[in-house]
Image (tube, rainbow, N blue to C red):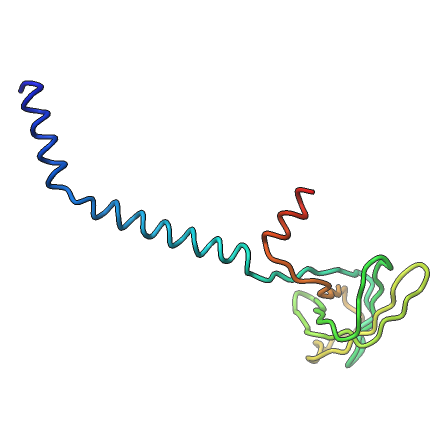
Length: 139
């Protein structure tokens, strides 16, 4: 087969191809990129502050946090006990010179245990988009 014949066959094959698969793949790639971009700027991801000192009672809990953060009554919180998550809400905040004492109201009943199991408290202090988190990280 000579070069002219191979070239003619290639031109005929390109003329017969409508690139439907390539166009469809490009369309789905653009849609996926648009959805990811929308999520990157519009999603709201909670930011938590964690305390390892926690006194768990029947319907309430008390935790100590660093005094440099801002916690207000009404903020949502989560308490983790033995791998289980208990939903809570900040009820009262007492600022002390060395720490911030936070009283939490439990929205669900904690599991019954004989002694005080190791537990952690997390208070939602902010919500941010992934774009804002990335910008904070690179500053």
